[in-house]
Image (cartoon, rainbow, N blue to C red; front, side, top):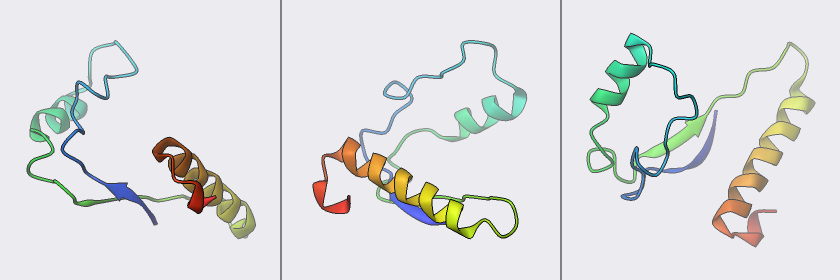
Length: 81
């Protein structure tokens, strides 16, 4: 697990539309309905969990490094690279 940011006031379903236009599964629909907006979770931490095969720690660290770099690039943060 590694931190990647926080929930912000601008994080809405309209800002992040669904990538797949097919009907949502029941579980997806329940989750989407439960998330009413960023107000309830404003500034809550967001983390990712990366899982690799056994003994591939080096690969996992390289992937985490790339994810952190991509997030920094998206935010315009040149100090994280």
